[in-house]
Length: 212
Image (tube, rainbow, N blue to C red; front, side, top):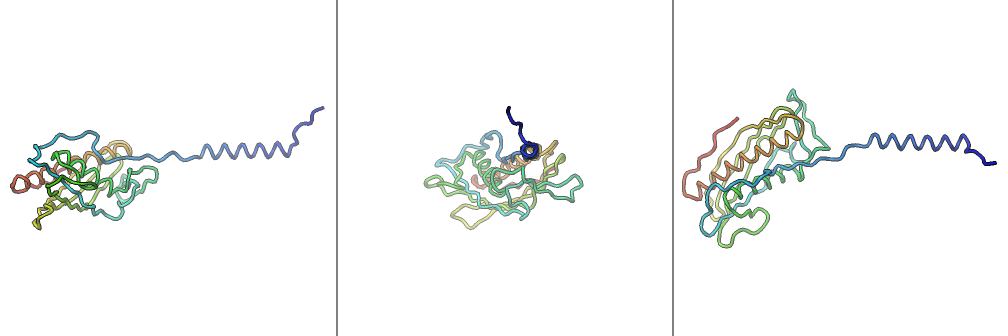
């Protein structure tokens, strides 16, 4: 006659199964990664000069609270700040913003992006140094940003400085925040590209007015 499992052994197996089930049910959701790069390549503002041109985006200076890969958002009241461990930029924020701006400016100028690689032989790059004063995201409301930048040719000590202030609506959840961030990047890259284009043409730089 077969012997049934002892009550003690059955109890151990049951407890282990329940524990494994609880662990599975409590498993955290996977991290989600976002980019600030524009979803589509923008059209050039002007034809590049003969011989080509290049831009170089210097490392950005950003507020310390933003210098991380996690997305940082404000609560609805604006006072509480949350660091979202499971919603991240694909690189640390300052690097992601630098890459996105460099790509956006280069595309609008039909220029080579010499930020991380070689430029154009015989063409000295326009170097852009950027200071980020704010990049505040509020879920369900908006992304507000304030940046200033300085442009100079690699062979010159003369500098030209502009600034941009503006915001983009961010309806919904974190996806809305990321999309608003992309639109902010597009507007800043447009302003930077127009700044460089004016300097290339020997014209005074027309800095953008503060915008909503």
